Amino acid sequence: MMWYEYTTRVEQHTVVGDLRVYPALHSPQLNNSRDVLVWLPPGYDAGERRYPVLYMHDGQNLFDAHSSYSGEWRVDETLTALHGEGLDAIVVGLPNQGELRRVEYNPYPWRVGDFTWDGRGDDYIAFIVDTVKPLIDSTFRTRPERAATGIAGSSMGGLISLHGYLMRPDVFGLCGAFSLVYFITDGLQRIIRERARADGRVYLDIGGKEGDVVQRLVPEGSLDLDAAHQAYVDGVRGLRDGLLARGYRLNESLLYVEDPDAPHNEAAWAERLPAALRFLLKR
Image 1 (cartoon, one colour):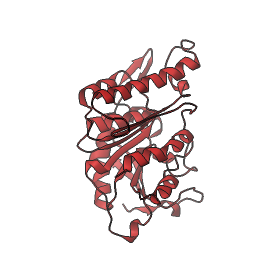
Image 2: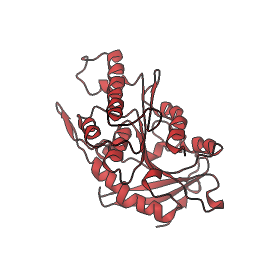
Image 3: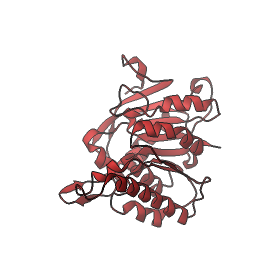
Image 4: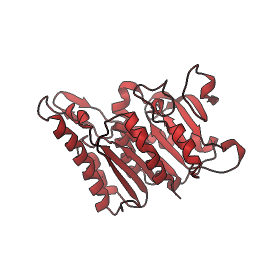
């Protein structure tokens, strides 16, 4: 199967720069297929330089407002601007699988009342590590070492990013966890206590107006919106504190950001993305 240029197959798009697509890559780990999107930095075709790679979830929301179901991260515009600061990366976007998103991005199966979330997060991480990464490293001029390999996403994508970073430190040395859903059992807190080691770089953030996400998972009326907002912030602060207890240092190996008025959406994550990328990609 051949790669093609994204902009040659769509009539309308907001893509800036060189975005390529590998169609319908099969995952033996998950027994499904999805397109793989790869954004290449300015000047990629003009030299022999090798680049760090950032693997990002919800790929349909990263580059093109027309393919997004909830807004665009503007990864392409942001990295085009950061190129002027000497910061470059290849970004691999992995589209989610619709209703399977909450399964693939969840490594901790759990039940609340009659509501069950299955978890195949470890299989999804294995798909990235054992299927996607070898394809990317064999096709593009990457820096394949862990210090130049990152994983990033938001909400459930933030959860699977931090989990994958902690569980596969042999592969990932960089992590961007935006508004991560911390409350899927206590699995992530336990993994931080057991496995976190301060030899990578983690970006962690939360908005102050994201409590509607928490409210969906508690009995109706049991938590007002202001309390839910605060519960989300407090939960992510707890993850921050867990990382600090394991040796991470603020503004060195851990950048923690609170955005007091930010809701839980792509526009908010797009606004915080430049600072995250500056931190993760700094030399």
